[in-house]
Image (cartoon, rainbow, N blue to C red; front, side, top):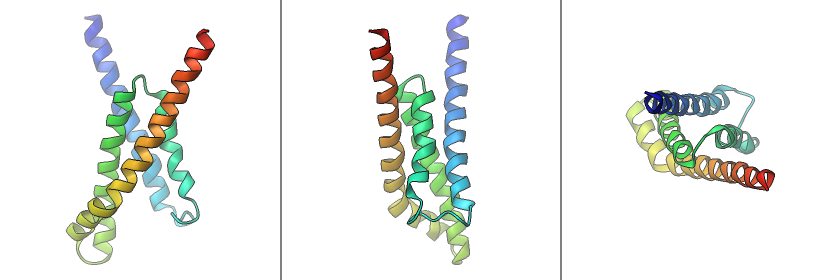
Length: 125
């Protein structure tokens, strides 16, 4: 019974991480004052936060993968609808945007988790 509770807690935590990452990046997408060229470092904040709160790197990377795909689906369909073809926006987003989101999210989550893990090891010593 205890193991089942832990499994559900981990699942809920992964959903929370995914929603936190997705909402942070979508907030930056919808703000008119923020542009990618000038404020690219703001997109690193949600993945770094996820890297620090995740209990395992595997769960953090899974949440990052799901959030990246959802972000591309939402942002791609919005950009595509602006130009008359929402499916074209999604395809364009998957071709060009998804690799950038993967690199941003996965590297940031991994570095933040590594720093957290290293600090735990140092503080136990």
